[in-house]
Amino acid sequence: MASPRNRNSRTWFAIAALGWLMAAFPAAAVMSPEERERFQCVGCHTGNAKIFTDPRTGEKKETLMDMARKQAADHAGVACQECHVEGFDTFPHFGTKILGCMDCHPREGAGAQEDAPYHFRRIEEEFKSTVHFTEHRKKFGCVECHHPHYFEATAHLGPPQAILEDHNKMCLNCHAAEPHGQVDTIGDRLIDPAKASLVGVHASIPHTVLHLRNTRCYDCHSGIEHVVSHTLPLGDDAPGCESCHTRDSVQARLYRYVRQVQNRGFTNPAMLKDSYVMGATRYILLDVLAYLLVGGSLLALVAHSIMRLVRPRQGQ
Ligand code: HEC
Ligand code: HEC
Ligand code: HEC
Ligand code: HEC
Ligand code: HEC
Ligand code: HEC
Ligand code: HEC
Image (cartoon, rainbow, N blue to C red; front, side, top):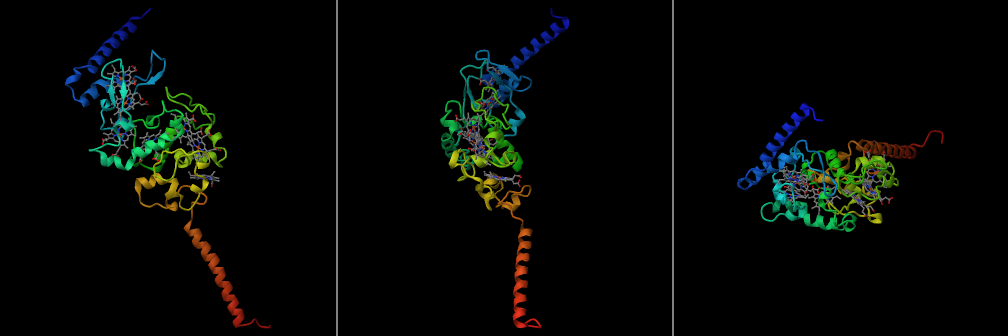
């Protein structure tokens, strides 16, 4: 039995819903894309909507978007309908079509110059050579790792720690970080069927957790011929320990993404201020001290021998 209070709130809800719908569907034809975006899409897809269960499939779907985050990201200037091109002007949405990265990039004409450094076509080719694509070509696309709402190129991400977290989060969505990771379902996304423990999988690497926390997955799991690489070399093709634990690893591997961002010719000691990476870190002071010590001893030895030759010890 509904209490009056309950009935009241229901009435209010109905009025609010009506107002909301009226705001959502004014004469769409006379509006600019920006206005349509404000009234049509954002009204329903920000706020309190949370998760929606598709009645046809029973799948849980996230229907909220973080508008503030989108506005701060690389596609702030792209309106909803430029990507959501079909089926979204009506509700419920029907016969929908959404464009993917390669439908727009690399741009020709305006924007061609901005796109050039990103090598979209090479990236696509590299991605298509990975098991992600070859084994799962129907489901796996760029958007499995890059949500176009929030995509930010490395150069716009800020400090190295933020870059590391952003890049690794993409992989950890599916390859859970914790031992026997609990992350089995992310909406209707594809999850690694093996669901292996990441720490277990990497047990052959000493200090497993340290490595997983302080390096990017791609530092070990992509080729090193390019600063940004989407290959996924497996087994013997994967670069080994020495690709990081050597003198020039910062340039070649470990912090190549920072080099891309700042391009000021960092060297290992400058980049590895906060961590000691065996074989990669050198302390100049220690080096100088060592030279002084060895050089000094040598000098003393030579001087001593000369003295002995020139002035034989008394009593001999
Ligand atoms: C009246 C409110 C309303 C409006 C206006 C609206 N949506 Fe939706 N949208 C929903 C709801 C509810 C769902 C989840 C149910 C479904 O899938 O039909 C949804 C689902 C979606 C989905 C995910 C499901 C799918 O089919 O891919 C996308 C993407 C989407 N909307 C984009 C848009 C865009 C872009 C616009 C503007 C052109 C828009 N919506 C306008 C309410 C709305
Ligand atoms: C640069 C292209 C692009 C723009 C601009 C864009 N979307 Fe999307 N959107 C996508 C793609 C691609 C997906 C599917 C992502 C996936 O499969 O995970 C998506 C998914 C969604 C979803 C489903 C939930 C989710 O996060 O996956 C909603 C809702 C949505 N978009 C609403 C909007 C609204 C509202 C706007 C405008 C404010 C907008 N989109 C602008 C490309 C875009
Ligand atoms: C509807 C077409 C469209 C789709 C789909 C799209 N983009 Fe874009 N992208 C653009 C436009 C337009 C800009 C320029 C935005 C601006 O300057 O405000 C842009 C900007 C970028 C930039 C920044 C370039 C710079 O100036 O530094 C990158 C990188 C990028 N997109 C990558 C992607 C990726 C990755 C995807 C897929 C997840 C994608 N885009 C999907 C149209 C699109
Ligand atoms: C398995 C996950 C994954 C897939 C799939 C993927 N990427 Fe990426 N992508 C990444 C990661 C991680 C980075 C950051 C790595 C880096 O900058 O070295 C990145 C970086 C990028 C960048 C930014 C480069 C820069 O200079 O900041 C672009 C552009 C890009 N990817 C485009 C694409 C396109 C286009 C596709 C589909 C053909 C794609 N990616 C598929 C994970 C992925
Ligand atoms: C959308 C979910 C998803 C994302 C995101 C994802 N992966 Fe995967 N990954 C998979 C699946 C599923 C497989 C199993 C492929 C197969 O069937 O062999 C896999 C396989 C792999 C393998 C090979 C394992 C083997 O079977 O030999 C590596 C290495 C790997 N992923 C690394 C990464 C890295 C690094 C990233 C981030 C740049 C990433 N993955 C992002 C789902 C994902
Ligand atoms: C220090 C280098 C290194 C780092 C960092 C690293 N991996 Fe690995 N990964 C490896 C090596 C080496 C193997 C092969 C392990 C073996 O065969 O013993 C491997 C194997 C894998 C596999 C395949 C397991 C299988 O079933 O064969 C997946 C998936 C994977 N890594 C994902 C990731 C993800 C996700 C990250 C980031 C959180 C990551 N790795 C970080 C070196 C690394
Ligand atoms: C992607 C680069 C990378 C690769 C590949 C890599 N390491 Fe490391 N390693 C690091 C970094 C970075 C640290 C330091 C982490 C920290 O303390 O912040 C580290 C730390 C270590 C340490 C611990 C040093 C200490 O003082 O605690 C050992 C031992 C080690 N690595 C051995 C290996 C071995 C053996 C391999 C090959 C199986 C390997 N690493 C592959 C980057 C790498």
